[in-house]
Length: 164
Image (cartoon, rainbow, N blue to C red; front, side, top):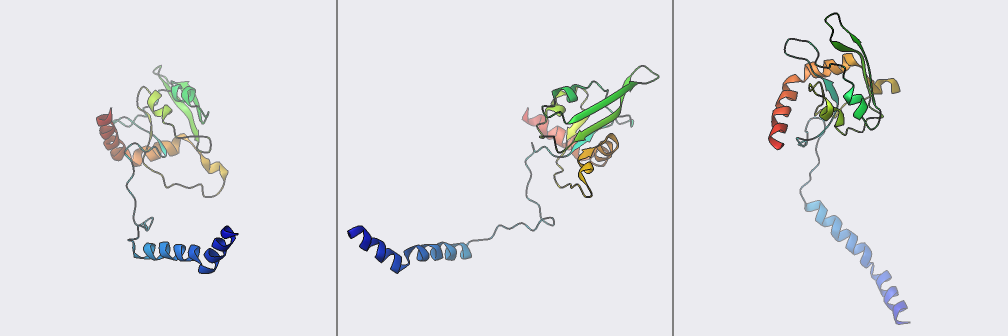
């Protein structure tokens, strides 16, 4: 009987509504932390792993030697590599595809590469515009990303060496 009376008084006094209004009033006074993306950007962790890129040597030759270690170590089977021998006896890739729908951005491919050919950049804002086929990034696109961002990649590699 006493519990019913307490509940009735609590319901008629609108204590829950007053508590909610108190929280709302507090939040009206607090400083807002909204970021106006894409004009403003929040800081990114130095160990963030984003879009993949293939790198080149300073002389312009691609670094990938088609050892297929990245393909073997990928837990999601997101990397597909085909290669052939060149006239000088070295191997180079003819096909290097990464399916970004399968990729879990674990960084194993980057760690397994003996020549530092594949890297994961700090790029996180990319989209598949037309169709699902855009999720598969081919060798030409990976090299293009690497060429555009080589200075940033080198800087990130130097900073990452500090953490090791």
